[in-house]
Image 1: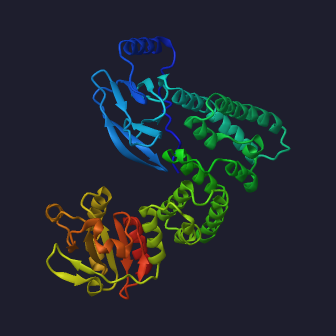
Image 2 (image 1 turned 90 degrees about the horizontal axis):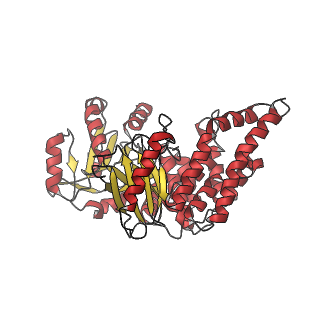
Image 3 (image 1 turned 180 degrees about the horizontal axis):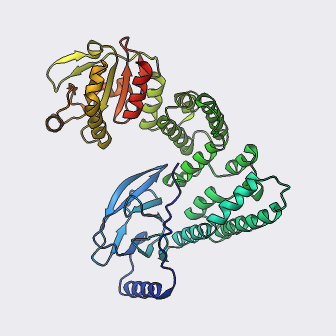
Length: 465
């Protein structure tokens, strides 16, 4: 689970001489500049001279880097979102620990902040949606600790406790303040992205908020707008899905029982997401990607069998992933196929299988593939002693680049490639949608597992040997 945003309590520059200096300097800066085109970003990161800021767009828990910003020697920069980019929530990464989320594509944005503590020191000079976003963030952050303690008391102590009335009164005051903010936002910016975003994540009744009943809490999610394509370019639906699944999480349940609970959660979740919509498609893909990380194959197959067929706007990535799971479940027979070594010798996969065989698909331009190859090379002597064979298939098109890579890495197992890249028939045969992809196969060409990393691979090998 990822947090909505990152807080940095170690610094606060609101008020005092520093803040006055910041305001005056930025006002002077803006007065000396001309007005800019619509949907323009102009900002200043004090102390951010020479840094490189990465711009990422949100897709669920992932953020794809789309651009780079380099402030000048004063820490100032100008930026305009590409005309082909979707409007929505974007993230400005200062480093892997510090970032700011901004709503882009709807309005001009002008701001100033301190690079060492970007959120605490942020001043939005122009951009009503972003101003509202951070006004809300600051409000909930100010009450976060008290809210956590009060809510824990309400949930853990009996309702007849003498202090319960006082605790609930204090907690209700905090919650009411949040809900009043959202109600006012709906009145002032009814059609704005920031309103849709914040109300989806935070709007709820007092009864649902303090309830510890699963059925009662689920009403909050049912009342949300699960058919708003604009929110797809944000983390709203991802957080909503995770929060809903957590209603069904049970730390005392074993793997089998927990998977059954998650299947129930998925059935309930899809009951209020309109079918044949982009959000429905997104949810199916997000669930498959998420449960893939935890190797909960029964949950993944539940999504594939019951909900993927309703995806009317399915993109190729989702289609390939669905077919991947339909065909390659544990115990399924791996298809035979022809391998070639850079357009020279050809051999069939079945001829290479000896005992337990690890089939790996990868590319030279994939960072995770490089990490995987390095880890496999380190573990190879142990694999070799245990009789585990590696069959490596590169999806590269450039044989020259592949040859340079192999010369540098000196992998101790043969690498095959037909030079057709993602247009190779192998991609269609195995319904590949990402690299690296690994299959662990036995001597009868049956699938033993699809490890996503070295730890999972070692675990599988220990289970079968």
